Length: 505
Image 1 (spheres, helix red, strand yellow):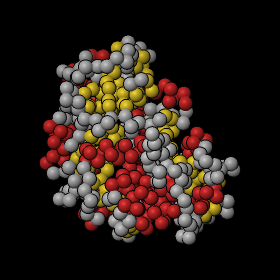
Image 2 (tube, helix red, strand yellow):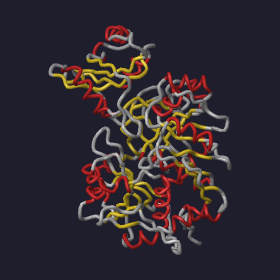
Image 3 (cartoon, rainbow, N blue to C red):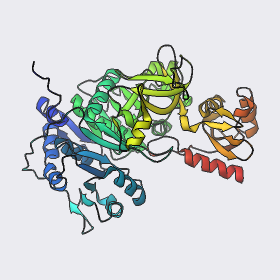
Image 4 (cartoon, rainbow, N blue to C red):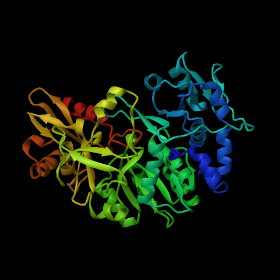
């Protein structure tokens, strides 16, 4: 019997360029310049010789320190053509922080641009070659030139070919290098298509950083779908609203703060906009209510780097009817809620740790010990606490390591946050534990009020009606906004520092 071929045999862009060469692949939001899939493939292929010179090893990796999504797209698929792993790095990190990640990923080359060249050289030291997509300033930096005469023969690509190494944001500890395969990316795109839908006229605006999966996913998915990725170099309230309108965008990925800023600026969604994929952090009830009033097709989503983006996504009707839900898991993704101690499954409505399995889940981390600790026979233990209802809808509360132990009692910060947000004068809140000599930890809350009328006494009275005494916030501070990481999650370290200053002041 003939053995089945392990699909695919070519890189994803090669397949797409053969299928629909003349369809528009990429469009730059700021200039309107566009490329067909044939042109996109030609541009990507032109960079292959530069990679082959710098990365002779079969299991090579190339790190990218770029804010330019167009350069990232070209280099990503140039690397995939030769089965080279791409390691996108956060351009907001310091040279020391980048050096830690470079040491973990061990790339053969670091590619930068003019704005990141100085940091790249410092982070790379003397052991790692640095090249720039722009004309270099530093004499030690090479130029990544595209050779338009190149005709690289694609390497055989398989499901388990490593395509990306992405570092987690590190808000709950040291960042982890997540390995994602071609199969993970294809499975994620397929499952997302069944939830969000796909039309030939789709245009997905990419305004999230491409060193996060949320920024890379629209580019990869558009290649698979044969649709257009509209590239914007970073979110800007006015420019993003303009891009959505002028580029006739049908979908966009945002974090809640971005969507809130658009709405605060008076933005209304055009009729062509089919979905706003909202992830990175929970959406507040007020934000969702405003989306419902103004006809925003918001799709709250729960995802991780470890699952190549989405795990569960709620369509607007579910999001508006079932407050706080992130919807049911995507196709072929299984989520089990387990007791954090016994690891036995929980019933509907009972909170526990979320464990995810399916074809989107990473094969593991760069660190084998972390991989072994994160996986059991049920799948990837996410470290997230949540619950599901009888129909499979998920709610995500907080991180497992965010649990507060006060006087020997376990306090779920998600429960305290939910109680705080139930107050009609609270817009948002973050809850953490602060060290306490008497109780071990005390519950503390950073609250974003609707107006200046909210007081600590009002919060205490409100919470006493809803929470046991040991769960009450003993330290409360007010802020105009919650501090967040670049990916939109609450920066819990910054919250804790702000509250410790309030307590000690």
